[in-house]
Image (cartoon, rainbow, N blue to C red; front, side, top):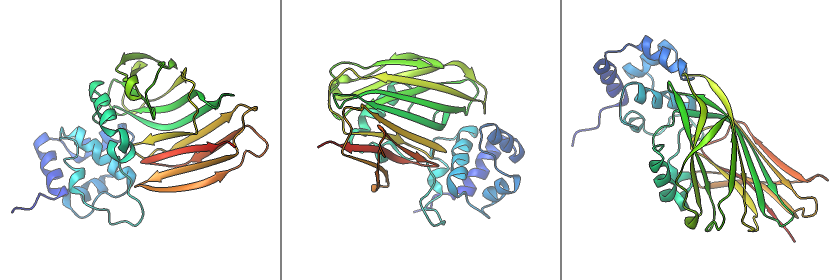
Amino acid sequence: MCAEPAFHTVLAAAIQTRGTTLAALRVRLAERGNPVSPATLSYWRSGRRRPEGAASLAAVEDLEQLLDLPRGHLTSRLGPSRRPGPPGRRADVHEVVADQAALVEQALSDLDLSGPLDLSDEALHIVVEVDAKRCVRHITIRGVWRSLREGAQRLPLLYVNDGPIVAMPEITVAGGRLGRDLSRPELGLVAIEFILDRPLPVGQETIAEQRTRFLDDLTDTHYEHYLRKKLADLTLWVRFDPEQLPTTVTSYTVIDDIETAEQLSLDGTTNASRFLRPFGPGRAGIRWTWD
């Protein structure tokens, strides 16, 4: 059986087929926010060095797009990292939302957002408000997004509930508008297209916000956010009604099915927070208990 062509062989062939140059690719990568030095690109093409680390792997994903290659055509040939520690990569949906992976994948496909996104989230600030009924009543997500393609404008807005959603939540946004709604409340899924106010040129950043008001009176004991790639800055802030303060609060992360947990103290306040810089891919959350 013939061995699969090596990463550098496929990269060199793709560059030749496209009739482009390393200099042109370097400019396009820099425009997308993934700068790579001329020497590094040359080493990748010749096989003297291979991409390592989150930034390099993100650049390889961009190269697949710039060279009109199928998703994974280059990254699948890298094999395991030679560096110690966890790899920097974009996780598959099954790795971060295993229980609802098929549901999420179908929603992304229906929204035409299943492939590499045209916008990259650079920072997320998430506020979760728990009311006197012990229900998560509001979630506000404010994010900084960077355009990876000319005219980028669309994002998926997804919430996955543990059970069916009786009353659809009310969603208001700033910095954009809501588009197609392909939610499946009977399956616990909210899936809506989010459209920024205007198309963005490559490399430009913008801020957008979404605030969701949940109408179902279901007691909640945790909030969890899923990340498919490394994020520079993730902030989780849970605020409790002063009449219903939890007994314990725990922050946690799950990476490659391994959970790391840390007890948090309210310290006489009504809120708990966790700052992760950087984090991902994986899951990060805060859970709490009452007597």
